[in-house]
Length: 180
Image (tube, rainbow, N blue to C red; front, side, top):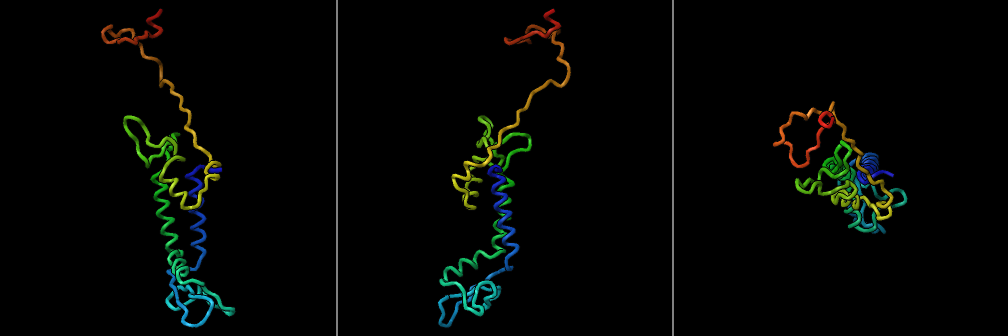
């Protein structure tokens, strides 16, 4: 499975796919003024019921509040939310240098990253909660591990044989030339 950042990205992509395939908005609620089992229909213009409504067999939304809720979350609104969520994702990610701490949560210059692993980012966890991440799913997510960076000298060791004793300090270790 992917990590938390990747899981949220998949959820946003799915929501965008569904919103782009749906009837374009804005959607409006059309309250029925005649006797029916349904309270309202939903359409792309006031008075229309081309999204949810009566057809040959009748139909609509049984409760007016439900119809208003559906219309409030039309495709345009869903796509705006997805765009905002992608901005949050772009702020709360790890550096591309092999580290896994969350860039968006910041760094304390004395203690280091405020969030050591992007999977623990409170902002991303809240965002994932909105997409329905369960504790079971969270436990199955991959946990990014920092890349192992090996420090290697960039050239030959310097000759320290001419460093005066006053500059050597308490942890002085002579180079091999001086040991010989």
